[in-house]
Image (cartoon, rainbow, N blue to C red):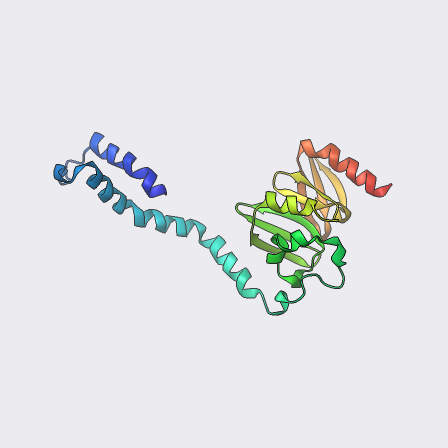
Amino acid sequence: MGALAFTPIALGLDQLFPDLDADPVDGSVGVLGMLGEEFAGFLVPFIGSWFLLNAPKLMESGKLAATTTQEDHAALVPISEPASTLSAAILDGFLDRVPPRLGRTIVALSAELHYLRVHTTLGEALILYSFGQAVIEMDGTDIAGMQIHRSHWVALKQVVALEKEGERLICVMPGSLRFPVSRPYRPALRAALRGLLE
């Protein structure tokens, strides 16, 4: 897509600033022919650049898939987590992609580009999933939680403390996890935590 979008721009620049050492433009191929030649010249470098930029994420995704064992495909809800706490919809959603060895006691969810980092009491996993969709799915369960930042959702019962760092408010979670709380979410988070303590 990048090569396709850049082709007419590059062709226009070639016409505005002709290279004196370059071969003269062959007018017999027409505008479509010139666009095709220019596109062919950009396609391989653009695809190569995309792979180089995304290689770390692609490799991480491959590692997650490779470390999933047959045990991970066994029962999705461990005995320690009552099945009633998870709706049928969420089991068809993002949790279905999390290795079952990590359990289903959700601590927090974090957005990382097009990926979702799922934190549980037993560890974490990075999966290809929409953060917004995962938040919607969590709202459909019995697990009380809320979004506290454009990139973070937390399970309220897992919150250890709220700490001030200058002007910032930090939500402290188990396992030394620390997430910033955006200003618009602060009153609702404090009210929700007060409601759990009462």
